[in-house]
Length: 253
Image (tube, rainbow, N blue to C red):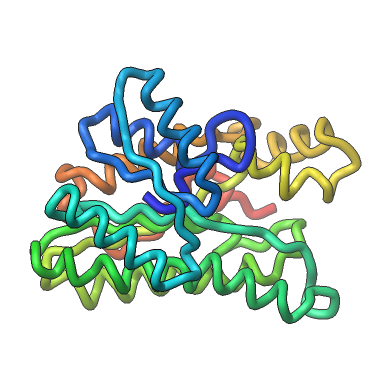
């Protein structure tokens, strides 16, 4: 599971998914660019009576990703689920966003999923089975008030990359799906989004109001959807991009 650490106190999408997968019996390898964050996820899982392994890797570094894949294969003999939960936001429109920030958004949000897939797919092909779960964003199909053009583009690309995986690797028994969280109450928004509002309270109020349900979702809402996509119960579900958004994607406002 890449991006399994939380960007701050509480439960991020990757951390919650790692805990839920471990609870359901998966042998989880929690990977993050911040080893301390991955180890904190492992500690949280152990507190719940389960366990996982924690590794550090930068998803934009092909060699580091390959190292994780080899570790997983040597330790467990197979890789049944690839969960990509890595994503960054860099605020800026095409005029103000630097070329470096634009490229960094593409590298982390899209190329990272390419590299993890590149190294995991041969394992899954040999098994003739596997599930790839990419955490995209509702911003991949819907423009909001945030001026993060690199995020929009990279997450939209991730959606179609996921569809292409599903079509091309379906004959090998490999499924690929993307989840599109909407307005979620996770540690990331306090670190990367709050600064675009007058206050944290204003951010929370605005994000609650952006959902037809009148409230944000949380990391567990995304984790349970990922659990379904990882399970045999979703064996005929592939090539989908599923909003986890309280109905926001249906709201024409």
